Length: 177
Length: 402
Image: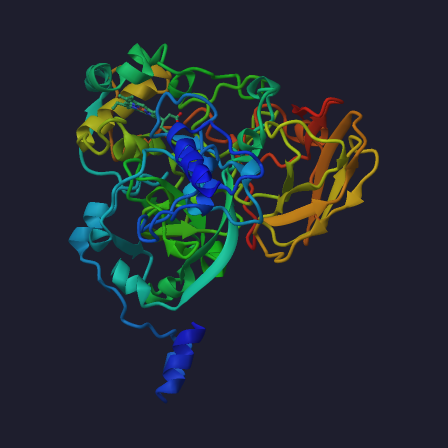
């Protein structure tokens, strides 16, 4: 905070307290709990951020057929372009033609909830209720044989799902780069 | 005589193709040009209408797609704003800056909401940096490469601009970073609500909250009114239309850092959080689609860049890599910025194979395509930076060689 120190020196206000605790300028305004709650839609791998509510595979099946299948294919089969494939590919990651899907590649089931909630359905993002997102998440996991029929997902059960490729990633971030 | 020329000039304007004799006064010298206030925001000459961004091919989802910068037609290192490459996942939102706010919350002392006016009060900085999509030049699978590609196709997800904004570190000091913060979630205000996790060290180092690009406000497709700019990092993490920063103690594992933008190795394990665009270069002329090369003097010029710092050396080979010569580097040579290189060359008219090889200040040198493929395998999709090759046939035609 070089500029702040210089500013404070300019006004002769530099104190030892200010040096220890970087001063702030009072720019911006306090964010209200309500506006934070409205914007805070992300879901972490440990489930932090999951909303109340629940949805079942059966509910998800109906929703997927009406809202998702036009692009991602009926029951997730035969999407309109290969990039929209949501199923299959298990056992291919170490072959020359790896097929990376939710089932074969994604490390966390929570990411599926987070992504559908913020970005899908593509023509109307953020239009699904939390119950609907739980339901369609359950159905996509069912299509990938990750959960059985009859599964109901909520904030407690979703983060407990272990994805097949959970251990398939190495962190290559090097601090300082 | 003079009256005759005027008549001829008028005829030329009206009919177009008729050509004045070389000895005639050019028609544009015989009448007033367009008024200076006709175009309040100027545009390139109509004769430059082929110098445009374009996609690789027709787009199934034109809002989740990219268009490429015409590097073959550009000079120096700066990309004009209208030609900066675009990669978006849900189109360009039409954001009213008066209504746009940045929320900074999570592990902070004071969660704050900033309007654009609030952000403008922080000290400003300007930096020249390249931006490259990590999917640029994805040459791992030969089946995805088309032999008729030019440099716009092969390297056009690359641009360079002067970015102006405020230091993210200053904004973080304003909210007060709690102990234990390791990652920051950055979220965009587009219909993808694009999100990536940014390491705190990078955020505190050279990260910019940018509101301007080459002297004017950001273009809408570049994140107007506010984008995150992380010098040297892959394009996707430079979140456009930035609306929210959430500080946390772990990465947020978003779809764009798990399903996408991860690099799958041959053993089935993928590299995650692979951010830096490493040292790379390409010859932009001679290059395909610019008409045949002419025997005799032929300047070889191109661009080199590294997300790890400055370019220190660019070598050029015209015989497929047997002999290399040092190209001269055009000032300025800046960190994490495009650097223009040039080499005077005399083409004898025979077959020639052109390559460029850049080295950066950390000592990293561009690998050959063979060694990069051997190290990474066919499922690695992003972060390709191997030496690139153009071939010149005896007739002067320049083609992609893989």
